[in-house]
Amino acid sequence: MVRSCLTRLFAAVVLTAATVAGLPASPATSQAPECRWAVRGYDVNLWLGGPGSWSDATKWSKQQVPGLATRDYACIPQGSDVVIDDQSPRVDLDLLELGRGARLTLRPGTALYLWADQNVVRSITKRDSVIELDGATLGGGGRLHVIGTLDAHESTTGYPAVLTTRPEDSSYAGPRGILEIGDEGLLDVHGSSSLRLSTQYIVDVHGKARLRDDAGLVADHGTTFMLQQHYFGSGLGKLVVLNDGDFAVGRTAGIQVPPTFVNRGRIAKRGQGLTTIQGRYYGADGKVSGDAGGNGAFLIPPLFVEKTETTGTSTSAQDPQVASIRLPATDPDGAEASIEPLDDVRVGGALGVPMKVHATGMLANVADPAVIELRYDASLFAGPGALPADPAVLEVKHAEGPNATYSVIPACLGLGAMPLGATSCLDRSSSRTEDGGVVMVVRSTTTSRWIIR
Image (cartoon, rainbow, N blue to C red; front, side, top):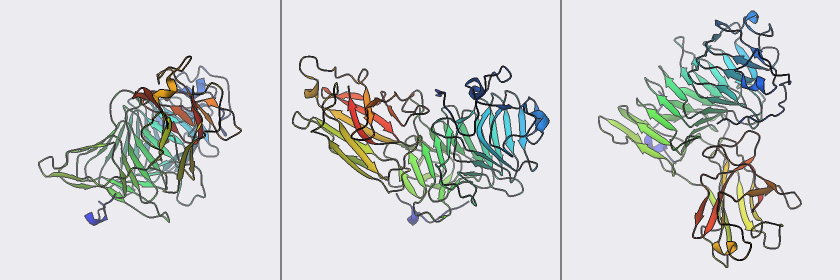
C-alpha cells in the first residue's frame, strides 16, 4: 500500500439522437432489442449470447471481432459471459453496452478503451452486470456509465488494475475519460494492491465505491476522484473504507496539478487503521463519518478549498443583479473568472439586463461543470406585466457572445445531471426563491452571457 507522512496532506439516462464520428447509422434492428444505441440508429456488432472469448469472430453478429481493426459499437446482451484475453489484448471501441446480468472479464495485461464523444453518447453497463478488471486496464477518452458493478483488483500474477484516459505511449490530447458510477452502481476495489488512476482520468461516483482487503486508490497527478449526489433522489455517492486504504498520490507524469479528491457525497470510514487523503481536497459540501469512530478506525479529513468568483451574494433595488461561479474542481488552476451586468444592453422579453459570466482558460466537463448562480432582486418582479418570481416557470437563455442569439438551455436531469448533447442546463432542483427574488442555478461547461425570461 502506498503511504506518505501526514505532513504531505493538504488541502438518467436521456438519450438524444446524434451523429458520432466512427459510428455509422443503420436502421434499428430486431436482432438487438436491448441494445439502446442500435434502436437509435447506430450500427451494432452484437454478441450472439452465452459464454466465450471476445476474440471468437463466430460469436459476433458481423462475424468479425469488434475493436481490433476498427472502433465499433459492441453490445453484449443479457446473460452473456465474455472474456477479453491475450488473443485480443487491446480493444478500442466507440461504444460498449453490457446487458442485465451480463459479465465482461478483462484478463491480466489486457486493455479496453472507449472513445466516443462523451458529451453526446456514453457507454452503459446495466443492472446486475459486472465488468471485472483482473489486473487489466479500462479507460479511453469516452464516458462509461456503470449501473452494475466494476470489480477492480490486482491479478494473481502481479498485474495492477488501472483506469486511464489513454495508453501512456499515446499522443491522444482530447478530453479526459470519465467513469460514472450510477446511483445503483458499485466500484469494488479489493485485493492485494491499489487501483491506479492515470493520465488525467476522472472517476465520478454517484452510487458507491468500496475499498477492502489491502486495496486503496493511487492517483497520478491530474486525475480526479469525485463523490457526488445521486442523479435522482436524495442519496449521496459514498466511499466506504473497510480497511486502512488511502487516496494516495502516485506519479507526477510531468503534470504540476496533484490528484484531486472531491467530496460532495460521503466518506464512511469503517475499517481499523488510519486512512489518509492526499493531494487537493474539496470537501465543503461533503460529509465524513467514522473519523475516530472507535475500534481503532481513524480517517484524516484534510483541508478544503472552494473556488467561487462572485459579484455579491445579496441584491437590492440599487444593485438588482449579481452572480457567482464555482469553477470546476477538475480545472487545473488555470481559469480566470469575471462577472458583470451589461447595464447598457437590453434583450426583448428578458428580466433586467444580460449577465456576463466569463471564464478564461476554464476546463470543465460533464461530470464537473461550472456552477453559475444568477440572482435577481424582488424589485425586478414588481409592476404591471412583471414576470412571476417563480424559478419553476422561468427560463434561462444563453448566448456565446455580444452578437450571438440567445437560446433556451434545457433543464438538468434529476439532481443536476447534464443532458446528453447539452453544454449547459438549468438546475431547477437547486434554483430557489430568496427574499422575494429568485436564484437561478445553471450547470455549464461554457460561459458568457445569460438572461432569464
